[in-house]
Image (cartoon, rainbow, N blue to C red; front, top):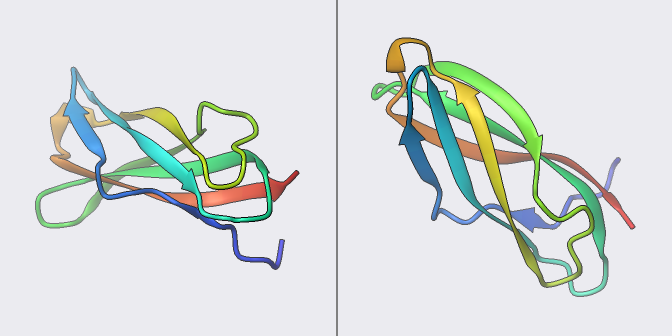
Length: 98
């Protein structure tokens, strides 16, 4: 897909450590005024305090088809061996225009 995907992940991410995993949750926002999207894929990354990557995984926002100017929640569970990661980040990996 050559078009820029109009989805943002606000900075209100929640990163919660569990037993050898990190739960990453938040909302993805479809910023388009004209297009509905489908299958918005996200990549979550668990990071050490120094910014080094511990692990990554992908998942989808909860709504299969976020309408224009709407948001949808997501939850990613990422392996975090020995609870080495202390922070997280999320980026949009891909999506399709409906």
